[in-house]
Length: 129
Image (tube, rainbow, N blue to C red; front, top):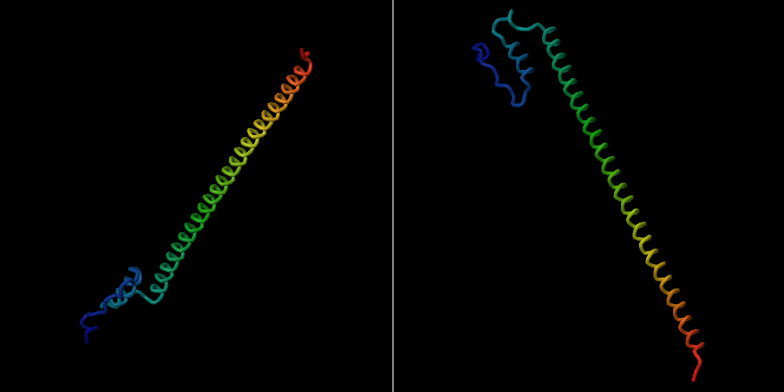
């Protein structure tokens, strides 16, 4: 009896507006204003197509985000490699400095030995009185 009086159920929450429009159009009290079954199928196909396009766009966005993520990861890897190369270069520089110090110490030791030999020889060559 309520249906004859135009009362209808309320749309379920979160039902897309396009679906609500289809079934409320089907409830029209004037039969000539109701969509045909072919029109309903056509509208449903439009909704499905629109949803597929939306999903495709979301998938494209996800793919783009993955691409950006990969690029960021590659940049981070390059920075890591650059830092490692910089550390290696600094280690080589430190090694070279240590080598120079060692060579200077060796040269100083050789100079000290030469000086000691000169002094010792000089003492030996001094006549004793």
